Figure (cartoon, rainbow, N blue to C red):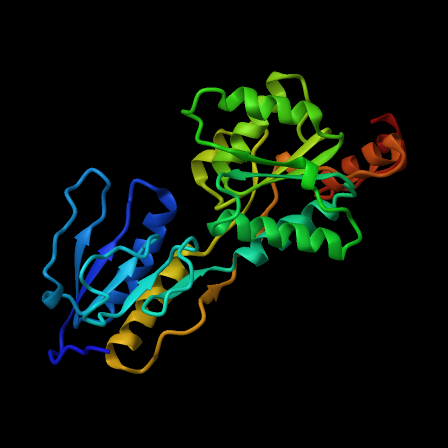
Length: 308
């Protein structure tokens, strides 16, 4: 592997900061660079900018969202260390992956929904489902359901496209109609979860009483514009950015070689009203338990619960 003889390191960053999760990764990379003064960051961080066209012999390392084996051009041959934060890049002998533990994210969603007393589950994610973070989160979700004694939600899985594609809303609406109720839905990311909540209510379903929803990323806009507010698993992408930069520094210095992906654990799930439900065989018991849970901040007595 090629090494730079200079004490300073020129690191090219490849990210699209119009995407909120990639901004968090960039913040983590910058955190690391700020405490390692020998780093010099260059590159394009906006989809509307012209890409920064570097000469391969000027670059000591590359870090960022690298999802295809053909990018960045000209650096593989020189052995320039490359670290990707993309889960969609298949294992590559010249690229080190540092990504979120998407299996753990799927497992966390399943455990949360199972804990609500639900017995029917569904999954929705952007296509194609068998590549990248969507597939890994789905697999983690399904594996946890099976481990807890539930059936795989094969019939209740939906691959969807972006909201700008014609037929997007109708596709999800038809799927929601066909789901058994009550059902717990795991959306692979928050924006899709937001759309599920909005469309479910448009066609007359109650959230979370009939359709409980959990998303991923804890996006402050998607979770708060949602009504009811969306429960979400908080990813630690800033830490992933720091770990990616640290890994690249080790590769550039020869302290590390390319190996298995380094996984960053998610932060706790933030429960909000979209999944704040408790299912029991008796609806009145369920209502009583939910009322008690929602009023634990003050004393309760039996007559008050009965009246509710």
